[in-house]
Amino acid sequence: MPRQQLSVAEELILWDEFRAGDEHSYARLYKEYVNVLYHYCTQFSPDKPLIKDCIHDLFVELWKNRLTIGNTTSVRYYLMASIKRKLVRHISALQKNTSSEDIPLEYHHIYTDSCESALIDNEDVSATNYHLGSAMGHLPRRQREAIHLKFYLNMSNEEISTSMGINIQSVYNLVFGALLNLKKHLTLEKITM
Image (cartoon, rainbow, N blue to C red):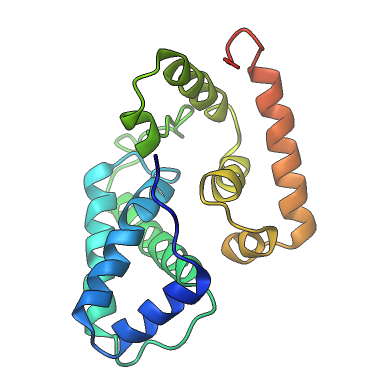
């Protein structure tokens, strides 16, 4: 069973305490968001060591710069936007230093291993996750990102709009298009009830 998310008020209190130098609040922020950030990053890269390094670097930089970091209305959005920028910069730098033959083709299939599936022994749920992961692999990258933000991270359409840098109507279009595409790739026989 996944643990309950912090409320917006709780995360903002933690954020302010962390910025004031409270190590306990800093550690709690890390504990609350490390898995969220990790699973979010797997939508952009399968390179697990790189993802872990980027998350580690982000939290080190946050602590170093805590006195100059400003207020935020959403800690989750702030951290997700920060880690996405950091990961994209690292991937871009790696690609500049790698010949085109060494760069892997676009990942056609991304299987998102969630914490819940690791804890659940039920074979039916595992099968459902497998088929859903397979269907997600058929989605274009932007649709996959929108679905991940909407249903895995429970972000509002407004937060998705800000996170992806698109307008609200585009969020609706991406999510609707993704759901239509998922429906094409999923059959009732593959999904357990």
